[in-house]
Image (cartoon, rainbow, N blue to C red; front, side, top):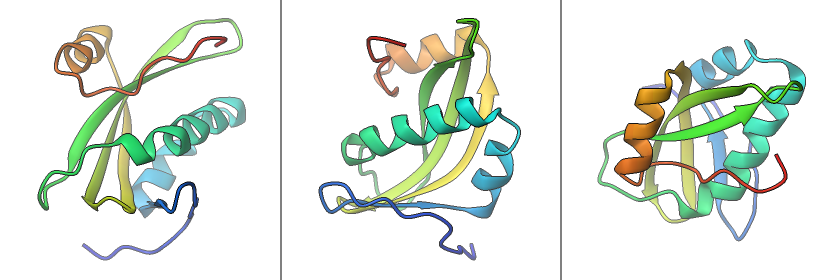
Amino acid sequence: MDLKQKYTEESSDVMFVADDSFLSQIKLFTIPEAMDIWSKLEEAVYDLPIVSIFPQTTGMVIHNKYGRPTFLEVEFLKEDPEFAVMIDIIEVDLDNYLDKILSNEYIPHTEGE
């Protein structure tokens, strides 16, 4: 996999890098939605689990300006506590998102959204 660094966020010494496919997918969202995704990932990147060398997924939810939820699955790779690569992001249905919650593989919804 040939990764190019497109975005880095340093928070608590954790580096956040986005792959080209992730950046291509995030362009499909409105600017406020994309900003919401970025901020949620920035807040959660430190807490993402470290599992071997295989990509993992996590669920998350964002809301549009009308309050309508969009359920997402983010594919990432985290082999080191201080480095994460966001690989892809796709919209999923409610059942898939609820499965992520049941398996504790999700970014919690924050108050005030």
